Image (cartoon, rainbow, N blue to C red):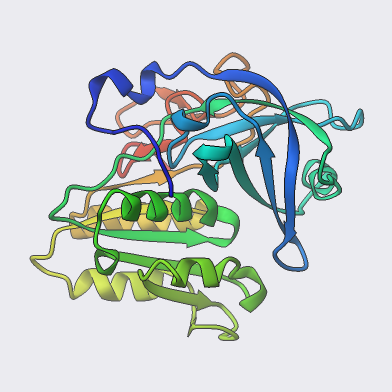
Length: 279
């Protein structure tokens, strides 16, 4: 069972969480597809502080990978002080991560960033994942259900190019949520891009209280941000960015804001309200 801090307790405000820097180990590795892997680390001292939308900065033992790599938290097992991440091999850092084995040492800095806010009880949550943007939304869905939210009021849209990009589908379906997979080539679920069935649903949901949550490629997030504004649906998006430091010092992840000024994705984000960031 997921056990995270109560979002309604001001003493546990996400802004007050102090990250830990811990040496830990790979306790489990699972291949999820040709390019996708799940890694579980433990023990981690701040496991009960981790909430959906938080990320960690992972330092690898590989001397060829100098900077830490930011990774979304995909889930936690508090009783074992263990944390899961999910990765897709796209470059040198993720390739190095994919070669980790059970027992290998790593160093974790986290939890970092601003997490998602849970919806109100009278709202249906609309989760929209694109590709490897699924981990924080899976963690969000699991957390909501552990806190007594009705799975039938969680709509989980998940888009990918092909069936191979829709990972963890059995785990998502086992939650009992309203699962809508979408692939560009039609090899699994609805054919098209994920924002098409999403907009169809938003257009027909007049009077229903909804809250949007999204994580994925920038183009998808821009479209969802615009749909939220168009249909007057509040929500949050989790941005992806290069984060060499993860603590707001290097300014490598700065994004412009709609009302002027800028924000650091690693400290003022990665989760932002819809309409906040100029995408």
